[in-house]
Length: 71
Image: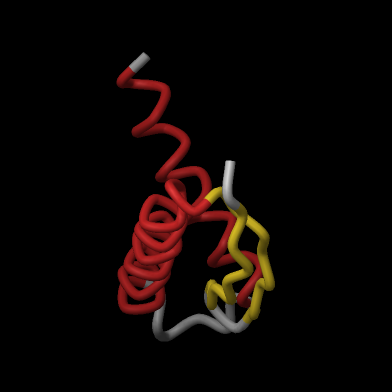
């Protein structure tokens, strides 16, 4: 397959990735989903001092749980 280099922003992290050209929209949508969950958790826990990594863990658990339910 044809590969393409892309840069994805997830939270405060910039990720340079090489993906199949056909998968690029899926990877970008996945990053958008993670970032949307991060915003939701930042809003929910805005009075706390939770780290970016902690918030990413919340987002990962949320998304993984939704995925497991679909299996």
